[in-house]
Image 1: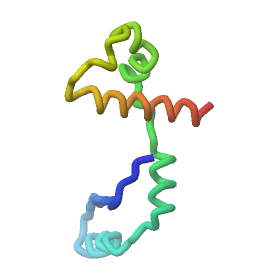
Image 2 (image 1 turned 60 degrees about the horizontal axis):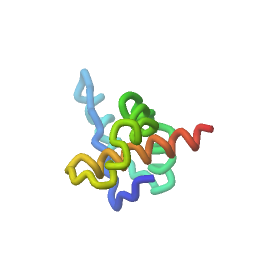
Image 3 (image 1 turned 180 degrees about the vertical axis):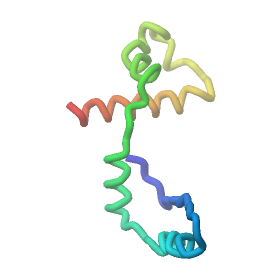
Length: 93
């Protein structure tokens, strides 16, 4: 789970009348508890799909034993995405 200190939700307001717009503005007063945010995060997780699901299983085929020696700005995000994908698969099982 992502350990964000602050969660920012940006509402998308849409209205045909000024009255609807005023009613929609009421959503700005809503505050979610950390438990509610965690629950929303859990139920809204999606599988990242290809290529991450493929790469998590094929990393040794693609990189051999050299993956750990790769110094790249893309390595850390890739590892994080692969770990998240594996965690989602293990929770679904």
